[in-house]
Length: 244
Image (cartoon, rainbow, N blue to C red; front, side):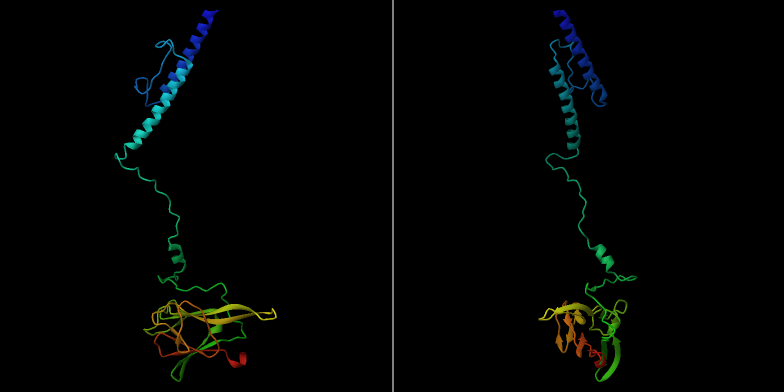
């Protein structure tokens, strides 16, 4: 009976050893002659056990891992840190916004865009801009025909060009904006009012003889006088009395 147990145990060890040898032969880079792989068989070591066979398999796995590490470290000089993997950059570059602000057919980038509250004034409020040089009236502009007027020296992008060397290419804007106000009784009034904004021009914009602050909306009222740069021309904002 004891002899039968020994025979069965020997058969199990032989089968397990064949399985281990099969695993080592499946690897193309490491074979039986590789000194890093140690396979213990029942023939060479009668005292081999199942635990010892499992340890040999673990040694095989460690040998494969060491091979990968050595091949990677061979590309890096001793004492140097391995290069970091390049990561994608998702930060905005501003190129898309610049493209969106560029005037079609030109390389000019607009300095101004209308705000969300931009509105055309109602037909009953026919705001006008009268252009004077001294006592002579040179031009009349119907401001109510649009919600904003870009004023400057560049005729390709401005709505009202001014040919004067002291005027910037994109100098200022007259912008109509929808505004809501509430009185002491809680009644809400909605109106569309004209505003003037200087686009950080080189020589400034003057309202009624005073230079206005750049990049800030200033409300315009009837009979206001505007001057751009050092030009002698005066631009009078008016709402005709008959249509007030």
